[in-house]
Image (cartoon, rainbow, N blue to C red; front, side, top):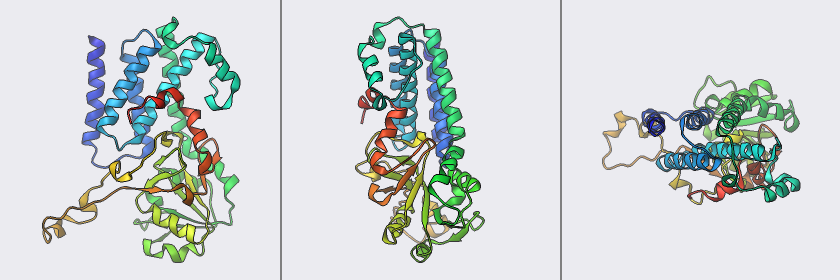
Length: 338
């Protein structure tokens, strides 16, 4: 009973956070918050087997995602933690620390084939709890250094003589870190903040400035299995201009933005910003029966993207699907409530 009360309090606390947050946090902060939520579940929930823990995590994660279905990171972090539980279960049953991705090792497939299912073996729940908590801690550390690790990849994809265009540099922690470690010859940012550390241009100057640009570097909010990307609203205009002038487009994203699900209609998932950001309250009195839409994201098709840069590698959109097996287990996203 005490365990159920603790889980209920954790659930209420995270739901209260979403309801009280007026402005959406950065993706990295949200990912860390979700990992902390699942970390507390692993620490305080009652379970005896890996299957019971997986069931608890999946039930709480899917319940939270159902209430906030436009936040892909909730489900992404759920899948990451479920992968950690399965890897720890494998370690205890096989006595091996080998947790290679499913798609990269035939020996890994063979070992999984002959191992008993998680609910058919005796697992020390205390060791399972400790192992999964250590895994979550490692994932948190990887998020904290993801921007720096992505920046380290930049030297292989960009040169210092590049003229780079980006979008909303003032609002992206990933891009700020990227350009603080890699300084291009000239950086243009389509931005509303004149204090952004770049040559600030407006959206009407995108096409004319693109003629001078040799590379476009952008930040992604989510990476989809087909190589398409969800990015801040307005990014699509930059990508279309880059396509017109044959300028390569590079998207930067941490592993926590890898989303193993397709989005047939972005409008059904899009986050709506405050109407007053588009139509000030002082002006609203001049209109009647007006509905103000302020979508926060664009869906960028894969054919507009040249490269996706993560902390571990650089992939073309056609090969993004291989990254999914590095962090998620096939069985887990196969069972998602879509």
